Length: 298
Image (cartoon, rainbow, N blue to C red; front, top):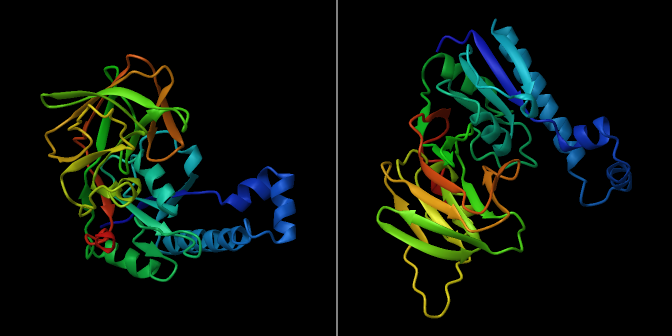
């Protein structure tokens, strides 16, 4: 790949946000006391910014034009660059993926002491090697299936890479809805529904008893959380793997339902009578990840 222009999407560390920018008194006091809830944040902060600076220097030294943007400030689809690099952990990779079309994405785990970095092929130890292999075309990005969400007839802007959670806006509330897949339709009450592509099958869906798929698989799956059928009810649509041609339709019976996309940061109201269609997107994510990255969970 001819790397001429690169966009770096980076997270701001917890320490940066709470201690430096907002000067939150409670957080600073806990840091000063060495409280075990915050003992790692300063270390993670230093690791993160060391990696960010090293990456920026390395790219500049290769004659590559570099632009850097905090992930919270990324608001439009990326264009006009050869590569997007997320610097942080899996959350930063997911956030960046929402604004990436056909441009390949590389994840860099900037703090291995605090971040698992499942999607991150690179880290402080192998960063130069990974960049060399990309530049020499020894690495090819995989095509990862994403999902798209049609809410009341309108396509939501964020493609789903991990999962969408459809549920009551209050975690103690009962999620009530109709679910339809093909010719089957059921009225259900539960803790909500997860729907996710293979990239998200190692997260919440796995924890709830779902199926871990190879990351480049072309199927997607749904899983009902804590289904609550009455003694005389028998539900069929509580979990399943679906082909790339399938879709799921969910109609809200909740006054204050919600949709959560790839975590807690992106959410939409899902009010009484609202309809959501979940289906595979026609635009995959092209990402530098290992093809066997999900195997450790299988």
